[in-house]
Amino acid sequence: MKAEIRFEFIETNRITLHVARAGNSEAPLVIFLHGFPEFWISFRKQIDAVIDAGYQVMLPDQRGYNLSDKPWRIGSYKLDKLAKDIVGLIDYSGKEKAYVVGHDWGAAVTWFIGATFPDRVHKIITLNVPHNSVMRKFIFTNPEQRKKSKYMFDFQWPIIPQMTLKKNDFENLTKVLSRTSVEGTFDKSNLELYKEAWGRRRAIPCMLNWYRATFRRKLKGVKSQITIPTLIIWGKKDEFLMKEMAEASLKYCDQGKLEYIDDATHWVQHEKPEIVSKLIVDFLSEEN
Image (cartoon, rainbow, N blue to C red; front, side):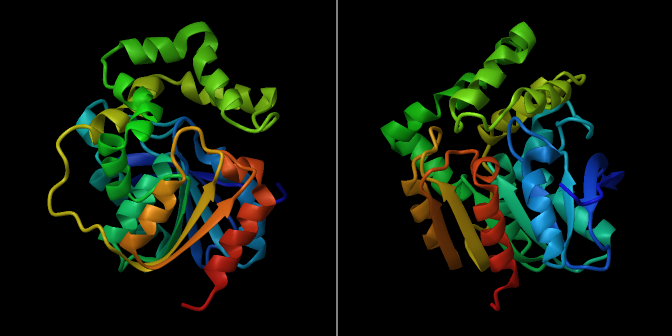
């Protein structure tokens, strides 16, 4: 990575987020949102390509992760609050609108922003998590996906899940990353960075609260249709999510586009960085 990264602690939506930034602050803004169990470095391999294409980037540690604030209440991790965190970053940048790119839980937030705040985003790009309505439908009605998502139900228990994840220096988390990705994707040096983030006070229980919050009372009156241009990038060898969910998400997009990547897993931006970066840059620069 050749870009010069600078770090800021930014107040937004009554919390403080740790944010990595790079690029010319006058350039159009692209915000990258990581998922579980990562932090801002999730999209580090995309930074140079996006900056070289003429954009600036923000990569926050989302609430509950790494160096960002970690509210204790489960309700603090509902999608509406998570989305407002990111809208606050757009406000802080001085921009009217931004481009938002998200992976895993970051994609769930991105979908929500696209539906709820279309006046604040030019386009959205999601990686390996479907539209929120598709996710909910498949988890509760499709036996195969329900089986794949068993861990999400396990995470609803108090105390036990965080004890399991912390055990033996985060052995279970590191094994999951290694087992479900292309060999060599997460090397020892990377895993040490993750362990440092996971080891911060209250990090693991607050990371799990993202899962717990989504199983609580469903948000009412939330729009689901995405009217702005949307790109879905999907690694076809995802062990956690059925690829059919990607195509099902297109019906919620007025201007949707789907790109499958054959030899990639759930961790697509790590495994195929050049392909993913090109897809992102090409989509950002396309005329609507």
